Length: 362
Image (cartoon, rainbow, N blue to C red):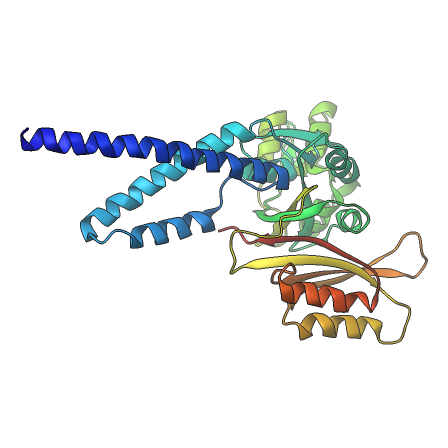
């Protein structure tokens, strides 16, 4: 047996072992896909991929071969993602609006291979997951310029879904008109209340009359249906392409750093996010009607080392002048320290609801 034949024999033996390991790895990838589908998590986890590459490259001592091994790992992970995508293709994700809405754009970025199911409002999208019609819902929770989306916060408080991921979408609002319209023709503008608020300066400077609509994409569809060149919509460029409208003005929102945070909600709670270093948790609660209850509750959270990045109050619709609180903290509330914090917090709360834990995606 010459050297070439010896080398080929070794390669065949290694390939045989690798085929068995490949099947084992892909079986684990199937488990990962099932978990992600159940918890409404995206296929791509860049933090986990970086960790695999870092650990994997450290196992190869040969400096020249290390770079090739990193490429090999990347190829293997891409095959794994492709397989997971095939398994998750049956996943149904709810969002509010229609094709071309910012929620649809966000949903498509998070779940590119899943079926996107449009619902007319936040509540129906949320309830579709509760009923099991959809596996997850993507709903906006906050805009960097216009603040919280109160209806969604109320659903988080009253419902039983969990936040398992947050996605930030940079929002750029455009003014869309009919194909024969010019900017000088426009007198009335329709859009969602949030978009109208984010573009208030531009609207005011042009003396437009505003009309609220269910969402930005449906506002664009309304303009296309009406065919009135004096009517325009504030929506995305994607909506213009879908409904055959013309972009009359771009980036008309007041803030160039306009970003909307979308929560991914599902029936199962993800208590162990993959990125252990960059974890956030959401807790909603009401405090007892006793002097200093809120201050004591906040002291408990801080006393256990949880830094609060968000604190908001919302009125309780069923009780006049009563409020509940939305808190987002840095850290995992499912650790022993987190569990201790929740137990201690209960003594100052009438109602306490952990609403989800997630890791910041890369």
